[in-house]
Length: 519
Image (cartoon, rainbow, N blue to C red; front, side):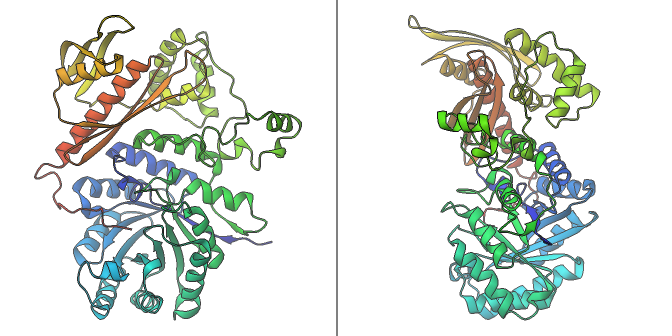
């Protein structure tokens, strides 16, 4: 049976990054874009070029580096946005302009446009975009709450003006699977010229139905799914790439569609996005959660031992999990480490391997066995080369008697500063020491600890989220010492806040445009 092709449009770097606290650095955006390109994503929405100079530079550089993926930028329905978007993507081998406007009654009221005035703006801006670029995507934001007659009218206008892809966003996660399929089917059947364009679906997960709604839209005729790694995104997130891709792969018997995604690369990019965004993947998350292939029930374990298909509908290897997890130890050499990292999907240059090897040896001296997840945590440790704040040493005294104290040496802008502080527990004492050395007004919103592997000598991964005057930043770190990991994560979040603070200064964001009003 011939399978229809479904395009995968990844918006991790745009819609995903809009999730509060998920802002990525320039280098991290380039890295994630390269991983997306390598795994076979068809279209990468690299950012919102007019939002800031940093966003423009990231989209522009991603466009120039992309090998096979189409590189897309987002633009509101005005000439200035569209021109800036084209400047950013025009050097890509395959560029795309994605322009949008809110068409529902609630969204029409924001710019105070009549239906006719909005229709005219759609015609003019899509025409302008098409005069610049042959590949133009148009989205009626909040399409699922737009009157159907008016939605058909605006889609027809966009097609006549030159749009090549019509995206139908469920901006607030309001629709349900049957409605999602019926809406796409209705547009294809009623709008003149619909057979000459690709229809896309863009779903949010507010009611927990983003994946179901996206797959239903494909059943209704959509041939592009907009999604993010780990379902990252505003509020409850977006459709998760790994879920729709694996659903189509596993249930090809009832959904005869295929994608270009190399599914064996899913786990690697999932872990990397979790690290750079600071948003840990919940243990029971479909496909990429830590427990997705774990079996604790006695009945399940017995069935798995007899036949893996008893309780597994896909193999761990299908999504990039190693079939075995044989640990390395302190006597393992560089060649063994390189081989294990290659098995896990990491192709490191010699200098990168040396850096990981040094940290691996240090970890192996403190930990009897170093497992796959330990190595992944080592590879994904943040590069602190340009950080203003760095932890040099930490000594903590805690217990049932006496105050909890922390003696710390921290490097601030190249100079070592010493201090001592007390607190309500060792972590609080360490955080107070950081505040003593580097006073700040940031509020700790989230503090989360999870073990990378099993055992009392397991590495602890700590996630910290901090807020300062509306700016949010996250930090992560891993160490066998939970207090050290906590302190490093706290300092990492502070360093990110300092970057956000600099970005907000006059002259940094040359456009001064908010991008929170998008799909």
